[in-house]
Each structure stands twice: as structure tokens, then as C-alpha cells.
Image 1 (tube, one colour):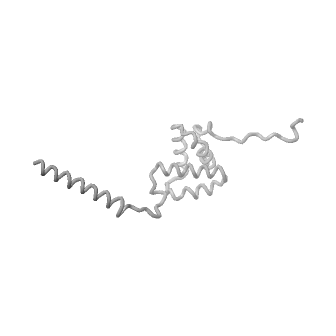
Image 2 (image 1 turned 180 degrees about the vertical axis):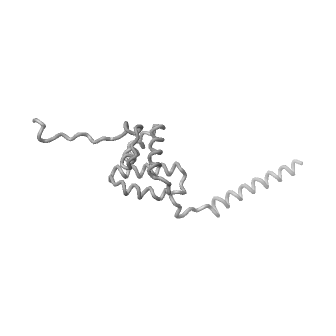
Image 3 (image 1 turned 180 degrees about the horizontal axis):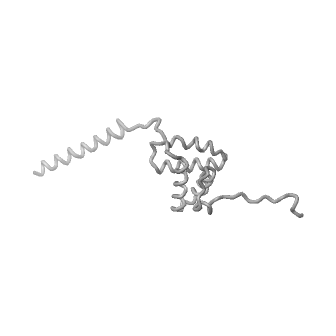
Length: 131
């Protein structure tokens, strides 16, 4: 009986070892030319935040929309609004400001987003300042 259990254990370990070797070394999965739509939702969200940060730099909402097209969302405007509100509810502070700016540029500024809206500081008028 001990011999049978020992043989079974050795066979099981050898099978696992061969399977791991073949799966990781000989025939690993290689993804090439995968679309952004194939990314996990978390990575799609991170990509959207990067697009929003790019929008903050260049201010081109059309370029941002073109960058979001590969995600193949049914309605990009709803997606950006929902993601922004989700980040606000989760207090994901570093991502809120760029997402609110992008949502505002897309015409999707909601009352929840108003507090995070970045407004430019007023510039002093050169004629009204005194020395």
C-alpha cells in the first residue's frame, strides 16, 4: 500500500513538473496585436485616465476621443462620466482632476464633479494694478 501511494505521489509530482515546464517554458502564451478592448476593465480605466491626463496637456478633446475609440465602448461619453463619478466616490484623488476636465470638455459635467472642477485663476489686469 505504501509503495502504491509513493508511486502515485511521484507520478503526480512528475506530471505537475512536466506540465509547468511545458506551459511556461516550451509553449508559453504569447499575445500579439491585442486590442485595447481586450484589456481587463481596470487597465481600460487606467488607460482612460492617461488619455484624460493627455487632454490636460494638449486641450484637444477630439484627440482624446480618437484615443478612446480603440476601447470600443458603446457610448464613450457615458463611460467617461461613469468612470469619473466612480473615481470621485472611491476618493481616487490623483485621477479625479484630469477625469473631471475631460468630462467637462465632453459636456458631461455633473453636480458631483463641480467641486473638483479646475477653474483658471484670474489674471491681474496690467492697467488696474498700482505699483
